[in-house]
Length: 181
Image 1: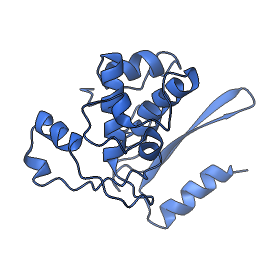
Image 2: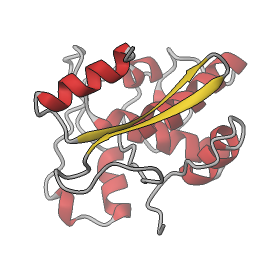
Image 3: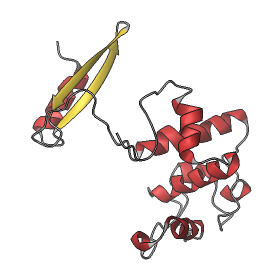
């Protein structure tokens, strides 16, 4: 019998949502791996592929560290970001708002693609905050939380994620940032 997860993947592939997928299922004390479809319509999905988790790093990395700190009492969700990260210009934005994308941040940054990393960070630290606190997804919210974590710990996010998440949870094949292999 095909698992519901495999059936869903096959259905979505048939609908053209994506070419292929890798799936590992844990059942009865053991793992089974499944490689379905193709990477690009031509090359088959197989063991050993490297996946870019992209925005998942916000949840796995930044979100996890923030929750660790909230649970330990080191952070208060209803405090302004500036209580922990004074480089940000607006003391009305709370950690809870950033985590729930209700900060009112307008993510538009003129010439964003032409800015250096330092210039972009400066622009983000001075980004426009509006009165509209309805849900509006923007990566700026979690970038600010990441800047806060780097400031608090005095380490870069790649070092923090490696030490506090990947090693702790034995995620031996996970890393943050571009990898050569």
